[in-house]
Image (tube, rainbow, N blue to C red; front, top):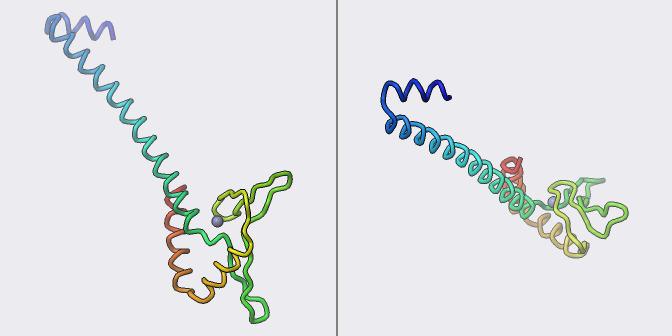
Length: 130
Ligand SMILES: [Zn+2]
């Protein structure tokens, strides 16, 4: 860098050399900042998509057992904790409301088109959150 500065100084003079070095320094700093900002933006976008995926997650699935549709919850409470964790989307909650989940499941069984739309949105946001 010093040799390059000496060569530039001999050929172009002090002012132009200083201007060139300053411009290179500004470009270098700007590039580093731009990279950091892009990483921050990507991280924030992934967090946003994960939250949306958790919003659209049904936290349950339906299985057909002997011609009956049965709701199977994805929530489970890891041993030693009071929280409930959805195995599909990773949402943690403090209180598991079984009645509400069963009524949601009943609603989705009666409105499969709404359920399918939700799953589509979940899949879209889950992919973007990776
Ligand atoms: Zn979930």
